[in-house]
Image (cartoon, rainbow, N blue to C red; front, top):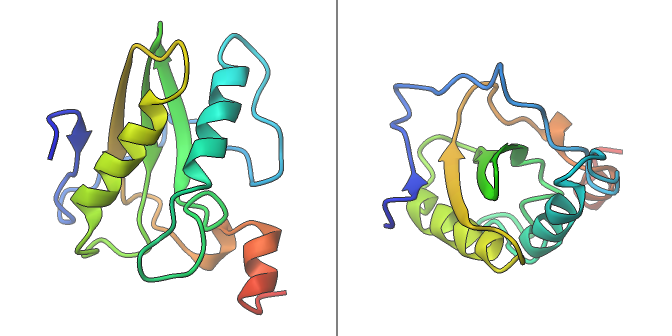
Length: 133
C-alpha cells in the first residue's frame, strides 16, 4: 500500500467532526474554488464498486468529505465494516481515481470509522436498488 493511503486500525477511530460531509449522490458539490474538482473526483469514484455489494462507493454513502490544502486533497471515507479485508486495496484504488483529475497535486485517503456507516447514508438510488424505499 502507498504511503499516501492511510488505514487506521478499527480500534482507533479517527473522528470526523471537522470534516464537511460529501453531498448526497445527485447533489452538486459545494460551490467554491474546488467545486469542479470535487465533481470530477466524485464522477471517478462512481466507477469504483464495493467488492461485496453491487453498488458504487459514492451511492453507498462511503464518501464523507474533502479537505483541501492548495492543490492537495484528503478524501475522508469509510467502509461498510471496519474489518473489511480489502480496505488497503480500495483506499489505493480511490487514491488513483482522485489523482486522474486535472490540477490535483497530491491525494490522500483517510479511512474513518466515526460516524460509522449505515444504510441511511446511501443515495436514494441505492436505497431503491436495495429495497430501503
